[in-house]
Length: 82
Image (tube, rainbow, N blue to C red; front, side, top):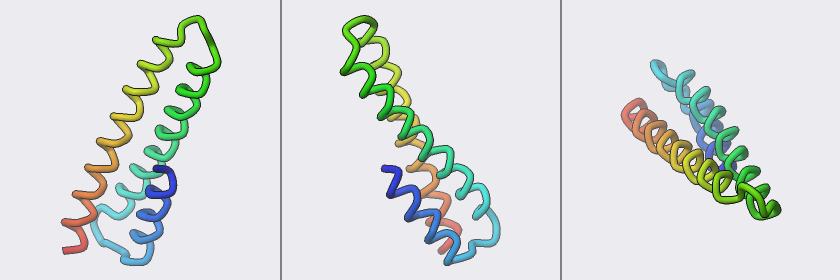
């Protein structure tokens, strides 16, 4: 998912949308960090026996929030390009 965010950031830089291009860039940069944090939390939850369920719950929540941010960025980008 981090690769998808980086690809879209590159496309935004090439297309140069006027209005929300900077917002989409920042949003996807934060989104990449959220996906990375979700993967790290999930990895730690697999390695630890104690409090694994809580960490996995945080990882799932963070992943779904990041996925929602990608969807919002995709909608913003599609309306900006059109």
